Length: 374
Image 1 (cartoon, rainbow, N blue to C red):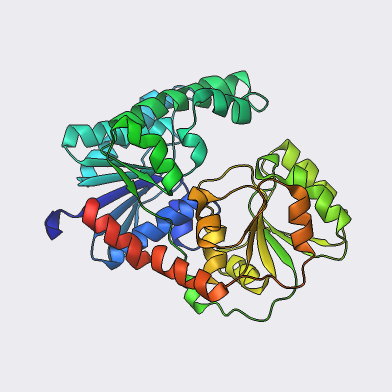
Image 2: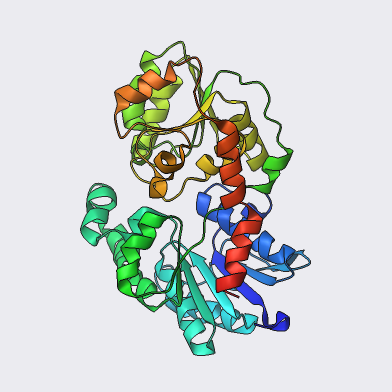
């Protein structure tokens, strides 16, 4: 692909905010870093952010586009009267050679349609292991207890239909680790393992002497396993736990109220990127209590900052065990509790930092992107 035709369109929400350093979700952070990395390699990037209300030039090679009339019209009807036609027009006017989306949403069917009509490449990046599960598994974990009739009509059913079409008709499917790749190889799709990259700002964060605290990054919710972890916080009163994240549902708010009663729990809410990285850098260890993930950004950031990682259940692609990148508790909460009481963690942090610098740097990710996608 010649240089003059290298135009990549990235679509999502809250991407303008993420580009400015205020990413909340891991997907938004990775999309923002990808946009900046592509731009640094002189590739024109157009970011469509449905949350932004006006177009502006972010830097020399990154343009932020809004979708006109996104919030106009009658609710329930405006999707068809305003959103779809204006979105299609915006996508067509960009004249991109590649459309990139991350995760699963029925909205992504629109750039898929435009890509097919304009003979552009449509790239779908998996953001979470659950996106490759069978419907029955997603129903049990996400839908059964947490969905109203309106949720089913407005979101769940459209997203399930979209999953079928997006996975089968994308030109390239990007996965985060080997286990995801193995699940989709049978579909006969072009599957590329494109690892998450670490935040370049890490290079400017100093790893000071540990403050002895344990840091947890992510939303306060049962899905993140905090219902299992709360009793550990209540029991280990001599250990200080710092939580970076906010409640995202009723159960999360219940956990938050319980944590407020623990004198050894510090609730920061969401922090900006630099402050989040500083929390990881100064911690004795970073822990993950989730039941399932994609490839946690916090793991990559902790490895790059030489902060030990302890995971209750998640081992993306088996890399923690295979490459000795931290402690994996195999879902055993007692093992996690025992580890949290260790004075010293016996990990080769130099080896771990070298691993992440080689396999999760912007340069490495860009080399794969240019080789297979541009």
